[in-house]
Length: 536
Ligand code: GLC
Image (cartoon, rainbow, N blue to C red; front, side, top):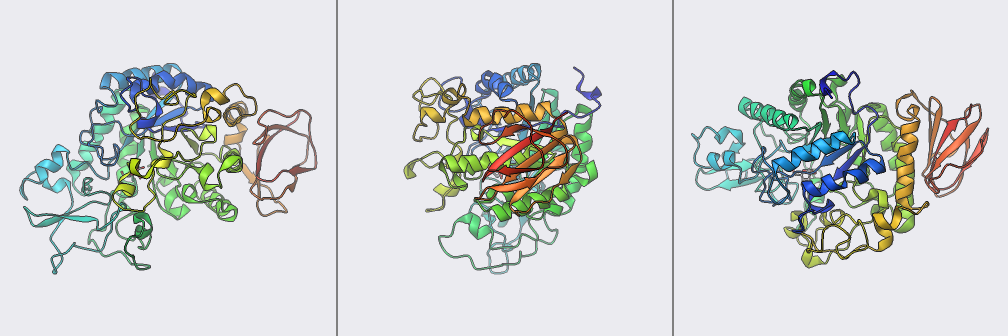
């Protein structure tokens, strides 16, 4: 199929699914997930009903940040397979009607990348200016007060040249200098390389980080940082006025928009701007990023009022451009954040019922469809640098344990080799095999929700009309011939339906379509999502 000729871009109405490559499926049984493992599981994703698979970085990498420290943007790390595997994967995906999204990391490289190795050889090296170097402050310390997301200052001294280099993450992840046109040129080529091999789009890592304040001014400090504080809490003690979310970022993505347009490829950006309006501006009226993540929702525990306000606020600012997530490989799993157990998982599906009706692109994280909570890992087995380099910090490992396919020794992740991260195996009831044929399971209900979305396109494309409700935690909207409801309240609530007869087609509690039609005022059980279709 010539992807360039399609009138409507493939991502309209699409639902994404994040695969954490290390932990999804390990075909060669070496303990680490690989592209071939993903290829073999594509029929599952088709069956589930998602449309696009975002695969976390599989490029050669020393692995200090589990692949987000890239040492070669044009290759596949042998532990994840080969370029030929990637081409086979995209080929099979396309045959199944699935799209493949590559996770590109433009804010920083690995310190092992040849560009950085060259930059370290001296101030005159042509690659020196690929990175951000500054002389020490007058006292010999770091040039400004910026801190790393992963703990400590965002600057590390290179003793040979006497200059500091910037890293918003680990010292092994030096930030690229996006004011250097050669960096932008290099990334144009990187994007084309993957599109030529079948990539249908890019998830852009730390998309809000590329441009920095030209004067490298200190960030305003909001509260003191105390010793032993979790690095992410310490990071939040600053207003990131000068290191993140600078306007020139959008210029980079306008340029990328022109690079990907001939291929019909998607730009899906990880932006971490708290303000919905600032988040939505990455879309730039359709000239830059196509779909923009709003991570603020993904950090929340079960706080229904904040959840409601953030959903409404983001929907208002980016009704068609938002990528809606509750979970990712960077957060504690939503079912855990929402209180755990059946109740936590129910709450997740309640919110997701609304999210599939909000336009933009809902993106699910592997295992969410099983109602998974965080995996259990012994303290000595933690691997995330946030945890291993900051004693006492929680880290992100809990969301990264292997995908439970069945009740076998490694939950069907592979043929029995110890997974790269040890964790307590999941119970059979938490696995795909344990839920697939159970009509009431979370998996069955998630799948039913996607079937409803496919069969009722009004759900994601008709104009949105928010409905007035008596209960402020009852969120309801009408989209053409469909009404979607999420009762975030711990009490049952009543909803006045728009005029006409309505047929309940999905409930987050039962999944299966209920028979009959309803009119007028209906009861919505506590913490439940519903979809109703207009009855003819
Ligand atoms: C993004 C990734 C995260 C990574 C960080 C640095 O936030 O999702 O996993 O650690 O960027 O690349």
